[in-house]
Amino acid sequence: MTTTAIPSIPEMLRATAERFGDRPAILSADSHVSFTQVDRQSDALAAALAGQGVGKGDRIALYCVNCAEFAIAYAGIVKAGAVVVPVNLLLKPREILYILNDAGISGLIYHRLMAAGVAAFRDELAALRFAVCIGGEATSPRDLDFTALCESTASVPRPRFDPAEDLAAILYTSGTTGHPKGAMLTHRNLVSNTCSVRSALQLRPGEDRLLVVLPMFHSFAATVGTLTPLLHGLSLAPLAKFDPVAVSELIEAVAATVFLGVPSMYNVLLRLPDEQVRRWSSIRYCVSGGAAMPEAIMRQFEERFGVPVCEGDGPTECSPVTCVNPVDGVRKPASVGLPVPDVEMAIYDDDGRPLGIDSIGEICVKGPNVMKGYWNLPEATAESFFGEWVRTGDLGYKDGDGYIYIVDRKKDMIIVNGMNVYPRMVEELLYTHPAILEAAVVGEPSELHGEIPVAYVVLQEGERLSAADIRHYCRDNLGRHEVPRKVELRPSLPKNAAGKILKRELRKSGELERGIDSRSPHSD
Image (cartoon, rainbow, N blue to C red; front, side, top):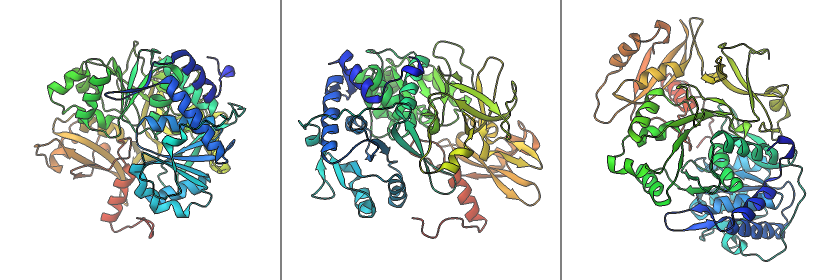
């Protein structure tokens, strides 16, 4: 599909439903929802939302676990001409309140499992006009029932869209400092990215079935696991909680062909017993994104499960997929692969000048998938672009074959005695130690050295290893400036909803140990 002919999401949803009709769009272990049903229910929801005064450009929050209703609600919101604002289920009420007031939401669709959270912030939502509860047990008798709305017989709205300009979603990024920013994604951004994903992953309409346990509010699962199936005739099987046995059982029950995960999930899945691993026989490949995949974990997973892992990448600001290792081509370990169709990637220095092959700089992206900008933040938007190229904040390089390698987040780089230390390189080594389950490396200020590397390590169950042992292992395999000056053994590492290790939380804990408290006095 050429970028000049990209339709709106509602247009593509209806065309796909017409083509695939009664085929399963959303699967569970014992039932399914067809494309026709998704289309009809989301049409009815759009009509009901219009009856509540929802129109073009209104923002509607979606606070929901992974389930069929999430997909139907998403489709219904955009069919009404409104903009979806997905809510991160792990955020505290104060954080959610900031995001929803910043977005100016007029409506809220929430799952009953999130009712307690809704009760904590709903009265402070400045522009909220109505709320809809999925599954009963509403927090207010005034709240509307989702199932009833999906049976509405009112006239279905048919707003006219300019796919290149009209917003479909605002996805808030988890900022490392200050408040999160809302990435404005248009219909063109999201539809074009699903087309790129379908092509790059060689997804087969009417055949492939994607297991979606990554949170559907997150950009990776929203685009690859939800919109791509709905717009291209694939099936998705949502799972609300990551449990390795439940994942394996659902894969077998629905004959899933593609698994989407983040590195920490693959690490946990390695501990499954053989009888659960055998349930993965229908999977033809796995996709990893959201964080860097340590080579050691990828190798162990591929050997144990007998399926390839295609690592890719992309930030929320790019809808989000920018690159992935080819499904049937050369997969390069430690690389996030080649740019997906219609997307260009280049390496720039700090002054916005392009760099050559194998030169480390900031990874920048251009294409129809690149966001319109940040919601109500024109200065931040301007700072995030070099002309048409959006700056990802990732440091990396491109090899002679065009494959992209991420060295680290720009903000995570550690400068020791004037020399660059890339935490990912240290972490890659730590993951090769058979006793280490998880590792993260961050920088700590040092009067003598500028900064020093600090490693936070989780050991495999039953293993015994001292901080001194770990430092000795590093000294044998790393440059002197790269060796962690401190090693802290922990029972677990903090993670976000997508399973990505939160280095900012590790930095905060390090600050507290040094007697520095940078937390807000009003933080929860």
